[in-house]
Length: 308
Ligand code: NAP
Ligand code: GLV
Image (cartoon, rainbow, N blue to C red):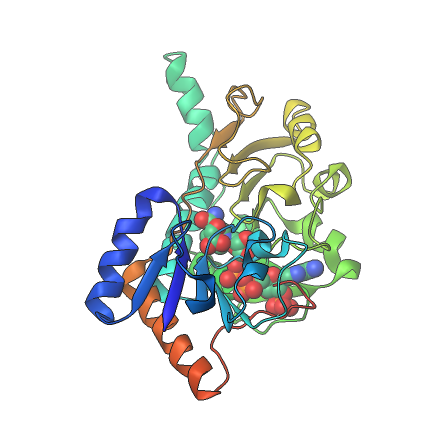
C-alpha cells in the first residue's frame, strides 16, 4: 500500500515522523519523488499541480491535507474519486483560539489602542459590554459552530449564517441568500469561516460590506477569494468599517506590494489561524485507507457537487 504525500517543505519531516510512528510498514512517497505511479493507491495532498492527480492509474481516494478542498477543485482534470478532508479536534481548537483572540481584539478596540500608543496618547475609549456586541459567523460547520459556541459562552450575541438552518443553543441561525442581508445588518464583528465554492467566491463585496453596521470589523479565516479586496479597502478607508484581520488571501504569500500590508486598518496574518496536526490527522488517514481497502464508507468525505 503506497501513500503519496505533497506538503509544504517545512512540514514534510513532521508528517514522515508521525507516519513512521503510527504505521512503520506503510510506504510513503513524497512528491515529486513518487516512483512508479502505478504503485500509488492514495494521495494525501495540499494543492497538487493541476492535472497531477489524474496521472495515478490506481488511485483509490484523495485526502485533503486541510479542512478546505478548494485547492483540489481548482484542478480541471481532478479524477472522479472519493475526496476526504480534515475534521479534527486540534484543527477546531486552534481555529477557535484564533477567532476568539481576534474577536476580543476587535471588541476591546486593541487596534485603536495600538494606534494611540504609537502617538503616546493616554486615552480611554468607550467600551461596550459583550452582550451589547453582535458577532456574525459566516459558516456554521465544524469550525464556525465551535467558535460561535465559545463566543456565545463569553457573553456575545452570536448570529450564524449557513446554507441550511442550524440549531446551536443561543446562536440565532440565518440561512441562504434570502437571509444574508439581515444577517449582515446585525454583524458588528463579522467572521468568515466559509469554504471557497462557486457560491462563496466574491461573496464579500461592496454591497455586503455596506450592509454591515457602521464601524463593523471583519475577521477572515475562510479564503481570500471570498473577499473583493478593493471593496474591503474602500469600506475601511471611508470609515464605514473599522478594522480587518485577514489570515487568507487570493495570492499567498501576500505580495510585498499589496496595499493590505501598509493599511493601518488591516492586520495581516500569514495563513496561520489553524493548522493540520500530524499527531491526530495521521490516524484519520490510516483509518480511511483501511476503510477504502475494506470497501467501507470513508470518514469526512466531501460533497463533490456542493464543492465542500
Ligand atoms: P464545513 O464543516 O464544511 O462548514 C462549512 C460551513 O459553510 C457550513 O455551515 C456550510 O453550510 C456553510 N456554507 C457553505 N457554502 C455556503 C453557502 N453557499 N451559503 C451559506 N453557507 C455556506 O467547513 P469547516 O471545517 O468549518 O471549514 C470552513 C473553511 O475554513 C474551510 O473550507 C477553509 O476554507 C477554512 N479554513 C481555514 C484555515 C486557516 O488556517 N485559515 C484552517 C482551516 C480551515 P451547511 O452547514 O448548511 O452545509
Ligand atoms: C487551511 O486553510 C485548511 O483548509 O485546512
